[in-house]
Image (cartoon, one colour):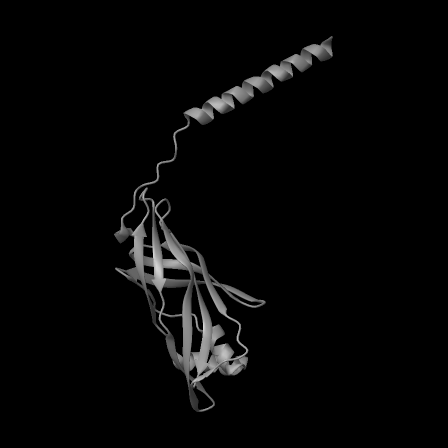
Length: 193
């Protein structure tokens, strides 16, 4: 008899819990996402960059700026590109030091979604031209950069996500072969102002 009463009490509590849970879900207000404007994309960013080339994977934080229709890297991440051309780690570091900071501009167009809570960025990458000094010789290098996916600026937290890739490298007119694409993934970039 005691087991029967305990079972009925537990069942009643369980049914009441389910009813209250469903009722609270039905009455819960949806989170209001503040509307964004196309201009909200503009600003300075700190972004998490995940670089992947075959089995190689590296992470670091990079800075970039967005203004009107251009995303600008004041210092584009070159290590993997230079390493693909030079091959030697010590000579790669020397070449990067000699080259200094390399700026790269990435043009884009924007579209605001119907709910006005995120902005889609369609990138239009151009080639990256580099002069890589190795053993007293300059290697004229052309890197074909492509957009791997569209970018998204999210109004809820003012973050940006996008991905690029260096798909082809040509050195002094000759395409590097074999060459495995270098993927630059920016899964989470925070607007700093």
